[in-house]
Image (tube, rainbow, N blue to C red):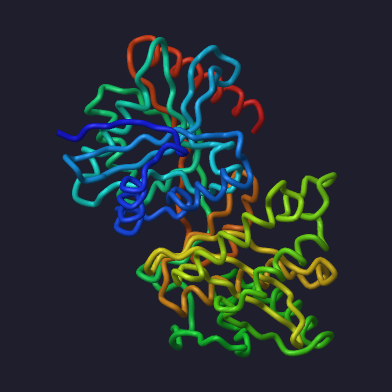
Length: 385
């Protein structure tokens, strides 16, 4: 029988950490944001005062599920205990909240995780703000909720940009093969092929203007270059992300951010799980993107563009180039851009990934509180639209 237990992240022992790493590599749906080392780095440097709870599911001695979360005594102003994968878990750096589940035990693991996470005195709500709704973990979670007699409610839905090589052909010309370390010329026509006619025309015009003013557009794989991640920090600091008064949360703005960033990227580079791509014009960096890799799946981490070139739409050009790069490499790519914050960015990518925000509760009181809260949320959302 699959059983669950919970402990603080700081108390996870070496054997459990090793099993957690192994599960991260083979999970039904990989999620680098829920890797043990990612969370340890984040909470050691960015939020040392937060010690997340880690719920694990075990089949005998085999770890088959992991769900980290933080606890709070109130939920949307109600005196209801909530366990959530939202901030401060990962100190705002978590952009995907799908639990780690073993492929051969997904439903059993989900059942054990949900059972523990929704247990307690009085009503307890489990909040999972950004779940992939088009993969295999989502059906497993729904089936687990039915097994438990729990109420699972969708709090919100959205889509974000993605690249899915197995999707119907929507981009032409066909991939030409893996893009080497470069720099290589940027094939603008390939970047914009999936866009509408008017958007293609607009992007071609700005790309031509940027090349005319600053030099030919090139793409470079800088994954092996430690200086590339330092360039990300410098470019952030020079723009709005370096200005907290404008809401910027650049690496240098965050307490402990630089130490966190250097440690995270060095560890991932050493494991061949870090990807850094650069769009340049005449050798001048225009856009940099940092991506986390799990096998053939890529997950957006951070990106930044040169704000002194904003008249050329560097963010648009950069994300189009990023999508082209992922497609040329044959990767399954999740941009990990929050659709609630940046709803229009999804249109720049050839494919979409559906995401949902869900809340789960058990027991008569818990289900009643959840139903009332969801109804109030839907009424409020209807008034705002």
